[in-house]
Length: 204
Ligand SMILES: Nc1ncnc2c1ncn2[C@@H]1O[C@H](COP(=O)(O)OP(=O)(O)OP(=O)(O)O)[C@@H](O)[C@H]1O
Ligand SMILES: Cc1cn([C@H]2C[C@H](O)[C@@H](COP(=O)(O)O)O2)c(=O)[nH]c1=O
Image 1 (cartoon, rainbow, N blue to C red):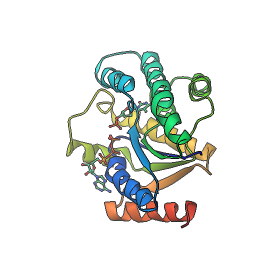
Image 2: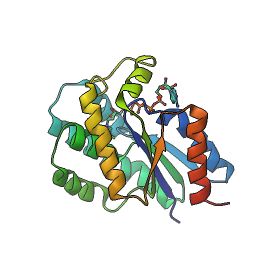
Image 3: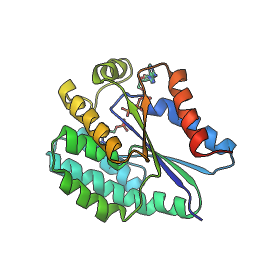
Image 4: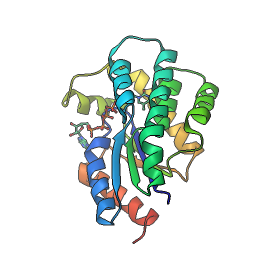
């Protein structure tokens, strides 16, 4: 049996976490067994790497390699077994974030990311990705009211402009998989967009 793998993407503060619980409930009400997880992190080892990558100074290539090292462990120990067991895996960020942040934001070569994604994922990728899109200045205002910035969130607006462009490029390359959600509206209006996509993709 093969489950469903769905990811959630967007710049920091776009509102993913606010919506994911409702999406989990939507699938559970249909009888799915849901695994909620995140990247960086999601497994014991990858959570240790997360603490390092979000807080310790390092160069861009080290950051990229730690993201993919954690992803490999997360896939091997949680995502692939859950999918093999027929579960619905909802993952807060996945490889699109590496393309957007390390590729777009940091400017690392996309060919390097393509190679890492091939090796690390070995064909496992989300069937559906919600891209929560909103302007970086609005996201920054939301974050400022919510929490203290980590090493990546502390970047300037021009960094987040490049990250947003990175997500837009990924959406353009995979229009069947990546669905853009206008995240600048109220939480209820964001949910209305998401629910419409879920009903269309997964009819009762
Ligand atoms: N549609 C919305 N309108 C206004 N504020 C929102 C909206 N959605 C979320 N917020 C608020 O913005 C802040 C960031 O939201 P949230 O943590 O869900 O974002 P996120 O995408 O998960 O961020 P990150 O990826 O950095 O963890 C929170 O304070 C949340 O309450
Ligand atoms: C998977 C992944 C994540 N990032 C960045 C994006 C965010 O700034 C942080 C994660 O924080 P969140 O509050 O859990 O969203 O990590 C990245 O740069 N590259 C990646 O591959």
